[in-house]
Length: 141
Image 1 (spheres, rainbow, N blue to C red):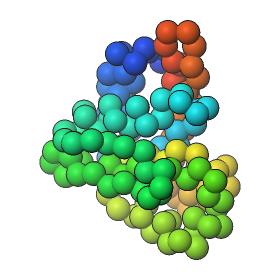
Image 2: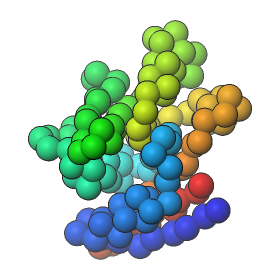
Image 3: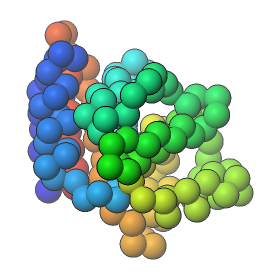
């Protein structure tokens, strides 16, 4: 199923509401878009809705950030920029997807996505396109 939501940065609640209503409690979400499209910004809005306090930053240098929200709603944020599928597997990061919660993956490869789907994980893709004053979030479930 494909759903498109047009929203400005101040209207991200529309996207977050849709995701909260649609996605299961355990899911891997591939975030796709150009640099500065708003992948981390969307993750920050999701974290806020999950009751996560404190700063949510891009895990560019650490590859992964882990957050615990209200009532145990965990959020995992990955930045796989320049990390190939084989490197990801060799680092043992694949095992992280066994943890309960939402796994937000920036810059995930098509090979990783296909592998995850092939072994039975629920994977959702959100393509973010920037226009003049808003963004289009194309959500493929």
